[in-house]
Image 1 (cartoon, rainbow, N blue to C red):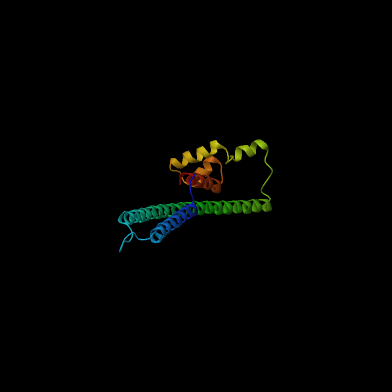
Image 2 (tube, rainbow, N blue to C red):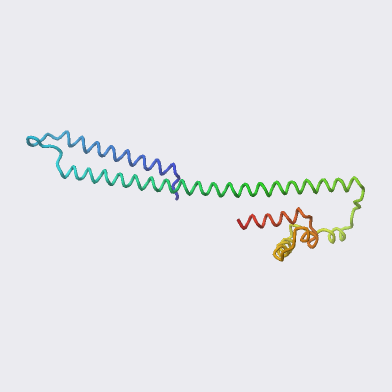
Length: 176
């Protein structure tokens, strides 16, 4: 289970509060003890133990801070990558919407002019390829690798230019 940034902050804060209370309890016990002789203060071994304790607390705090900063940097990097992908997908979506709109406009124009006769089922299959078919997608990618332009690929694959562009954009989106 991976800890979130808030969990790490709470853990560090709790540890620091515990350490402060422990230090306060040690100091309280030392001051409450009556001196056994004139001029006696906190024993040297207790001072050394407190100093080690404080030094270890500081090193743990520094390690937690570094870890937290690394997680923040990683989170920021991931957010940037996700934003870039989201922007790319929005761009592809807007191009697709524009291509659909353009296709609908063309269809309306053709219908208004009366040039569109209902084709037979076999003629429709011969005239237009299915852009969702895997073999059509593979053909488009193969022709692109051969260096053909989008217009030439559209003619050879019997697709609209927008459909060819969409297939190529989606393929580029998977390569990111």
